Every structure is written in C-alpha cells, then in structure tokens.
Amino acid sequence: MRKAGSILLMMVIMLSGCSLFEKKDDGIEGNEVVVNQPNVEVLAEKLQIPWSIDQVNQTFYISERTGNIVKIENGKTERQPVRLARPLAKAAEAGLLGFVLDPQFLDNQQAYAYYTYSEDGKGQFNRVVVLKTNGPVWTEEKILLDRIPSAAFHHGGRLKIGPDGHLYITTGDATTPETAQDVNSLNGKILRMKLDGTIPADNPFPNSYVYSFGHRNPQGLVWVETALYASEHGQSAHDEINQITPGANYGWPVIQGTEQKAGMFTPLYQSGNETWAPSGMAAANGKLYAATLRGNAVREFGLQQKQTSPVVTGLGRIRDLYVDGDYLYFVSNNTDGRGNPEQNDDKLYRVLLKDL
Image 1 (tube, rainbow, N blue to C red):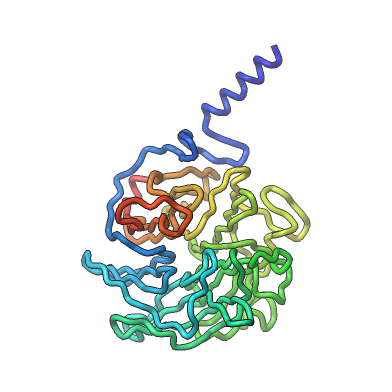
Image 2 (cartoon, helix red, strand yellow):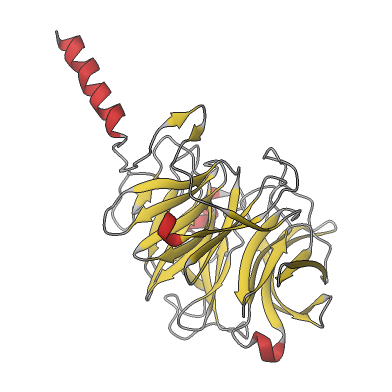
C-alpha cells in the first residue's frame, strides 16, 4: 500500500511538470524539452561560432570566435575581420568572445572586446581591448586589461556596459577553482572598470577591478533597472542565475547549488541535476531570458513567479540573446564543435516577446 502511494505521488509530480528547483517544463522527449514553439524568424545564416550580439540603429554586430565581426544591415550580411595584436588561442571555448559597442559608437566607431591568446612559452591569457572600425576592418587600438589567466576551458568572456556607464567583464576560474575565492586574482570574478580602463572609485575592493567573486564560469550579464543578474556554469549541472551584489562571494568552489555557508550567496535559480550551460542573458517584462548551450533552448526565468521554463527549443545550442522593442533576438552555436549543425548554421533569429 505504501509503495502504491509513493508511485501515485511520483505520477502527480511528473504530471505537474514542477520540481524542487522550481522548474516548469512542458515535457521531455529524449534530451530535448518540448514546448509550444513560437514563430521564429531567421535574419542571418552561415555564422561562424557566433558569441556576442550588439545593435545600433537596427544594425547588428555579432562577434565570431574565429576572429570576425559580422555586420547585419538591411538584410545584408558582411563579415569584417578583426586585426588583433596577438593571434587567437586554439583552446576549446577560446577565441574572440565578448563584444560591445561604445555608447558613442556612431561618433567614435569604437567597441570593446574580450579575446583569448597564447603567448609563446609564457602561457595563455585573456585580455580586454578597445577596437576601432574603419568600415570593413576592425583593429585593436588599446589594451584595457591584460594577462587574465586562461586555460583549456572556463574563459568567462562576457562584456556589458551597465546603467552606470561602466564596463562589466566576466572571467572564468581557468580550471583552477581556488582562484575564484582569491580577491587578488582576476579569475572567477565579475570585474568592473571605467571605459578608459581605470578602476572606479566606488568599486567594493580598493584599487581592484573585482566587483564580485566566487564564480566558476559566468557567461551572461543583464540589468533590470539597476539590479544586475548573471548566469553561471556549474560543475556537473548545478548551473546558476544570480543577482549580483557588489563585493559579494558566490561560493565557488566551496558551495554550489542549494548549499549554504555564512558569508556566501546562493543563487536565485539553480538547475539541480539538470545541465543548462547558460550563456548570454536579456530581460523584458519582469523576466530574465538565458541562452542555454547544453539545454538547447532559450530559457525564461520569472522574477516574480519564481519559475523557469524553456520557451524556444529545437534549434540546438543557443549562445547569446538581445532584446529590442517587441523582439527577442538570439544566435545558435551549433558550429562550435559540440553541436550538430544543420544546413546554413549558425543563425541569427528573432521572436516576438508576446509569443513566448
């Protein structure tokens, strides 16, 4: 009788689609979550491992890990090479990663980028630089921050300009977890700098770029008004969505998932034993959206409802998102060596927010 009751309880939980981690899915078919698919438009094709999306005046600029910026304007795609001072590293997940346009881009033709390079005999590093375009070509103009230790994995790499006008940078632990707890290390952090590369006077640690620490491999940043949220890859699942407090410790590698310890922050959301591998983030209408790689979906996180569910699936790995007006834009990442690319992958898509 007790066994029958347990089976009945399990069936109720399964039918409800909910879990202890406050996820709300519509069903599972193999490894792919099935949702009521909204109408999705393709805006550009044949992208080469795209990583970051930015936009100005309806023109998109997308970084590719292979070392290009793709300009998409009036339905036309132009691949623009980036001349970097150092050759891009060949390590997994490395290359030209974060990219964001200067707020005065239309006047100064400048942007900011994060890339991984190898220095002969001296190791592998990430750096943050200023790029400038003369039209068809981008050139590295200035180094803002250099020699962020790198490795085969966990580069971080997201760049975003916050409401305060400062540049925010995510860095991974470079497969050396203990560095995430060391505030004197640049690894496993969210960093904050002025656009000229100097340290803001109100950063939480004196004379330090470190804004928050205890991160494993954060790859997404987004603001809702003045509140900052970040996505982060966990170890063997336990992926996270965190609200970021200046100077706060997010626990890696001491705690993960729902674990708690005094002085350390636990996430708003975590994936439990499921793997999302969340990357770029966007926000609209009181909801966060995260691109997920292993999750093969655009995933929605309700800030009020405290529930999460996939809202776009069936397109493979998703790397970055961008919200403008009524639309959510996103890029697939099936050509990164871990996906199953279809004809003309990778692609820039858009979907109406009201359809999600």
